[in-house]
Image 1 (cartoon, rainbow, N blue to C red):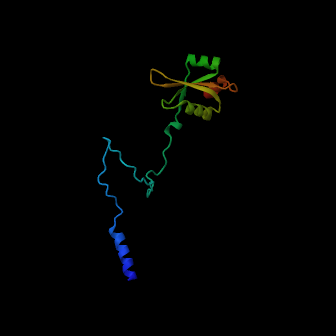
Image 2: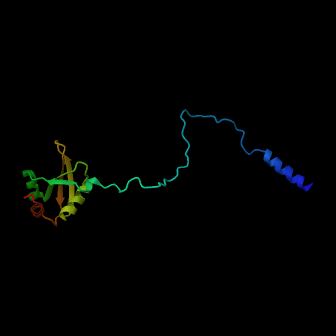
Image 3: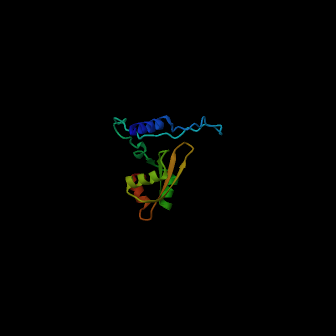
Length: 141
């Protein structure tokens, strides 16, 4: 009889359901918000690109130095070099490009976009460097 008691207890547990009998949910909002689901990390079988993308702007930040009368005056008076740079280049990239190309430190960089659609950059050199010497080295003068 001990076995039948166990069997009836198991049968009782199996017939009793743990699911709630709440019924349909009452929606109080007009919009439906998709519930958050499990998002797994991608595990590709192979690389989609054979070579990582190269920063195209890095090579062509500075296009050429400007050699107008007003830029010459700036070189002599305010220790500033004037360059035409890529339209998408920002001030940090211009500063880094000048440092890499000409081995000089600059205090600040001002930029403007000309009516012709070119970006002009005024690079103020630090006190340690002379703009006339750098302009001679670059070939502006």
